[in-house]
Image (cartoon, rainbow, N blue to C red; front, side, top):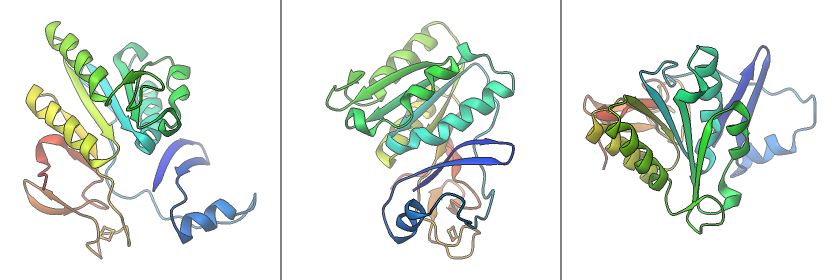
Length: 209
Ligand code: FES
């Protein structure tokens, strides 16, 4: 349940949810406590895009998209070519939604209960934007992080549109270095480990159960 939200110089910001002993201990850590971390591990999002980057986050999955957005901007991608779509069940599930407009990015929100943004899944505003870009003949790439049903929906759209899609799979990891096989993901190449081969996979390579 960890997302790297931001990184600058010697500072690292992590967004996490308290779900067990480890995250409880982290939440209880005092200021200036020493913690040990191993990383960076695995393969992240590409920091380049052809056309418009559509960043799609569900719940806590929006957190790492913030760092991706900042990296794309730093790489020279214009703010007008990065659009953000964030969905969740309720307004309280939308993480860091205010941080994307603060970067100058068009940000679309959707909630299942309609409490904020569009009512329904994040694919509602996403589909409208994909249709607009396709009608204009404008290339785009999809970048997604969030719960599996959302990732599957986004990957399907990327494949259908023949657009590159970059999907960050959210699997429980134990060792983080490829030794335990706790984090298997089926791909067109066979079973791969999210911690070393991912967590970001090309949408066209993923095989869904
Ligand atoms: Fe152990 Fe991926 S977490 S192999």
